[in-house]
Picture (cartoon, helix red, strand yellow):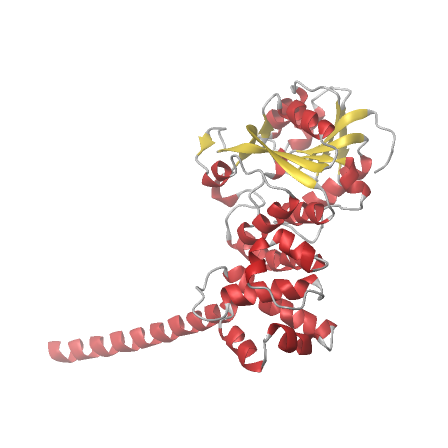
Length: 372
C-alpha cells in the first residue's frame, strides 16, 4: 500500500474498459452509498469508446481518475489501484455492475467489529443488460452459507467459486500479508485470491443480503462470460488454482479442511499435507467402482503427481509405501484421465463420421445403379 496513514475508511477501486453504456450507473451507485467516508479510484484501460469521457464528467473530490496509454488488463489495473489506495478497507466494483445504497455501510460495520475477518461479501442479484433480475440458483444456494475458513476451503475445492467478485470488501491487513491478485489469471483471479486469503488464516463472511447487482452481458460479453475463449482459460487456470492446496502443511491442518478424510486416512500422520490430498482424491475418484465425477479434480491430481515426481526423486517411493499407489494403481489412474478420455472420444467420433460417410456413399451408388 502506498501510505499507511488512512485518509478514508474505504478505498473503492474500479478498472474499466469499453463500458460507456453501463459505467455511469456503476459510478453513481458508489457515490450514492449511505456510507460516505471513501475515496474512489477509477482507471480507464485505454477504452476505444467514450468510457473515459463518462468517467471524466463526474466532478467529485473523492474521485481519482487514472488512464492507461495501452490496454493492461483488469488484474494489473486492480493491483495498481490497490497500491495507490489509502483506505483501511478495499472495495472492488466492475464498471458494468452496481451496488445497493447500504452495501458499504453494512460490510464496514461487520469487518470493523470482527478484526479476524479478511473479507466480507454480499449476495448478488444477477441482472441483464437492462438491469432486470435473472434467476440464479448459485446465488440462491449461498443463502445462510455460514462457514469458517476451513469450511470455505473445502467448499471451494469441490464447488469452485460461488462468491461474487464485485460484492467484496477486503481488509487492508490482507494486502499487508503481500496477498494480491495474480495477473496470470484472466478468469479465475478471484477464487485464487479467496483461497489464499483463507490459507493465510483470515476468515471470510457472506452477508445474507443482495447488496450487489452483477450484470450479464449478451453473447458472453463479460470477461468471465461463457464462450470458447473463457472455456479454454477456465480449464487451464483451474488446474493451477488447485495447486494452492499443496500449501496445506500437515495432517492436522488437512483434516480441518477435509474432515471427510479422517475415516479413510493412512496411518502415517507425519507427511506433508499434499500427500493426504492425493490420497483423498485417489480413494474418492479412482479406485473401485467410484463414479467418474469431478473430472477437473481427477485431471488435476494426475498432473499434480507428474509435477511432484519432477520436484522430488523420493516422491513415487512415498506414494507406493505410504499411499499404496504402485505401478498398477497408477496405470489405472491414467486410464481414467478425463482429458485423455476426451481425446479418445473425439477420435472415435471422427472415426464414426468417416464410416457414416463411406456407408452413405455406398448407399448412394447402390440407389443410382437401381435407378439405371
